Figure 1: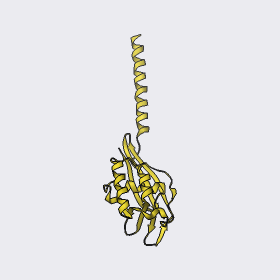
Figure 2: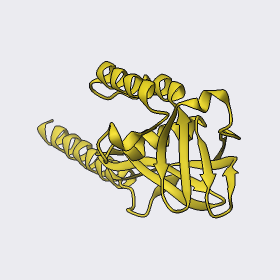
Figure 3: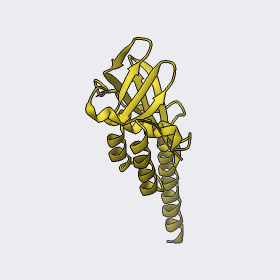
Figure 4: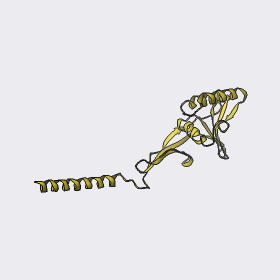
Length: 176
């Protein structure tokens, strides 16, 4: 009888070993496995001539584009963004808006947070983007979410924004 139990135990261990090998082999992802969702079109604000733009927050400005949103939209949208010192930051922005017509996000936030702030407003379509070279507003952008997880508990994910098919902004939201 003991020999039969040893054979049973050996067969059981071999089956367990084979199952473990199969499981480990199927869990591994190749480094080039990048998951990209399709591009989603997002409509942006069509004009900055509304009365609400009397007080403006500049979200982004370079040689090609200027992006802005009304201060009232910025304060409302900022509620969705979890940054420390929310009330103090909102009070400072509100006070400054009483004194000036144009405010700049770079005056209130660390440089590292600016792309994420801007990305949130782009994703929600709550901003006006002006193409300085074409001398016209950008009415629509495309957003694509991406993720890359080459191993269990390791990877990254983020968002890419495109204007006329060209990459405009990319942010990495998760790194593990």
